[in-house]
Image (tube, rainbow, N blue to C red; front, top):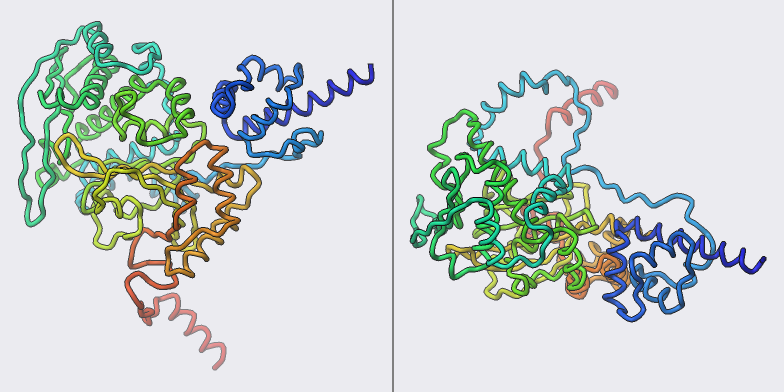
Length: 521
């Protein structure tokens, strides 16, 4: 009897520890089962057996415990010491769009903002479309790019089928009462001022009440054809195929509305079109890559960014979808065109962007991975560990960038990455100390340098727990210090050479000097 009680107690503590680790890393029972299968299919547990282990109803074998320990990068002894952590480690990060209390707060009343915002946009040259994208980005970041209503709407149409073939999409389109017509149009090119404008290709558009017009050139690009069909199907499902919908364009995305010809007033149409573009794009991705099966697919391939050809999806969709389905929440995604224009961005962890307000700036930091890849020739993915310095704020990132061409033939770079601090802290590793180690090593080598062995071990541990293969690739390469602006370079050896300190004193410094002189007189 005493022996049975001891086994029950041991199973209870073991199950509690496994459940705590699983939840801390935002894994479902199914996620953990898939991870175990990936490491050792023979000894991997089923979802139901994992549930019984966590509830103390089963004692796993030593082989199975070895698999679970490998998933979470823990020693076997840790699971059997019958001690529980007194407090869970917090991995909550400050909101990317969190606001501090402002005084006087009445200046931010809705009435004054409605008057001030159009004037602000007019004076700064920000178009209604750009402003709409800023609002949508803020909305994405507050929701951590999770939109379950759109997921459910897509799943109700696609029934979580994965992968989705082109024939499947034709059937879904026909079932929704949508007709398809084709047109032929080559990419157009031109110049605006002295700068070359990217080529523009009108890929497709929706004609109310139920016709999709497709460019014949999409027949040579099944990945993009799948996406455009799913995107217009989304408009039919979400908005009943009404006429308020922008065309799908690759390249120069100003479409019919040029910034220099737009009204100085905020146009509600710009807001509506931008929001519907976002909704339909998210729906299309959820239809083509439904959350649960796609999450399992990513886990099997360790979040590789070049796996789209296996399932008929573009690298951009693969990377954007990672940010929505991963159990880890702290992701970012960029899509940049030469010489440094952003066309899409999700900076879920609040990265201070080097492009300013959706515009090209004159002094971007040249060490960002996405900028370096813009000038590359190959299409092989490249990983990078970066320490981002913005004033006193330090952040540690890992990203992987891929250079590709859009449907109009324009070269561009897609970049997906994660904020490493929450993952390090979740494993009891001091993220600030690890970041300082890497930054110091970079400064010793002029701003780009090898990652110290201890820090590299921390990164590899986190990479194995998160199951992200390119994190380990980045840890094997030199890390780099980056910043939002080259003129504010935080490196010991400034990128632009020696920078003379500013001798000009501001009003506060002058005020302090006057008071000091008065006290000492």
